[in-house]
Length: 358
Image (tube, rainbow, N blue to C red):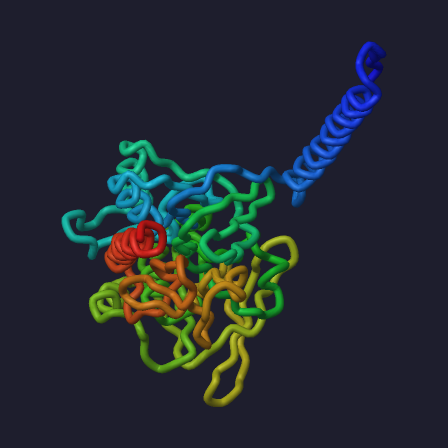
């Protein structure tokens, strides 16, 4: 450090001064080394460690996630809200009409999602658009890692919803986006006055077939059983569509085409005979699967992959809660997802009081 010493001081004083300066010099080196280590730690996974510890982190921006954000904002919680999508609303964005949400009969899924997200925005809360890579249970803190950041929070609400189930047949992946679709409301307009096939027999499939019947020249509905699983009111609406033909007891075997869909090969499950349907598009509506793969080491799942949690959203992991289609439940509807979001925040509030304010 280049200091000179005045030998008017005693040898002991000079020695003490030298040792003191060496200690300071060593301390500076150690501090600098630790600063560099911290910077490197911040940069792992290409992201930055955020120093703030949130009260609550909400993962997902469907009806459950949006409701949770609204309730958490009204409770004046310190909120981290993450979702990877551009638009909020989750699966309802793919629904052409929501006719069973109280007070808003006949509203489109897109409009309902926008209305909900606008409500949250008026409270000053909007999701950060980042894809969550993992969530780690570190005791009183939960560590959330994205590609950009590493966040810390006292609690987490998992509201990541579910995704469309695939058939897993030949041609499905190859022709995805070239005639194969999982969203009739998104892609139906591309098939105006054309022939399409809907695969499935539940509410989603019947809703898609009804919607497409208003656009397409001909709609085939292929179902593996001899009766539909959809709600009776939807079945009645479907049967009233003059351009819809139901093909019973049949499963899709292969989606045909090279640069675009040209046909669908099906097999009758009763006699194993195969036939082909000439079609311009195939809409697959065979259910959903929960988006829980990244949480398998965090919470307990049932055989179907849903997070085991009751109406209060409480999981087997302290500080981790579940809401919406991602958890075990009897009915998966917008109204139940909204209820889940509210209940989960109430459970978070109670947990924070018991865990951090005793």
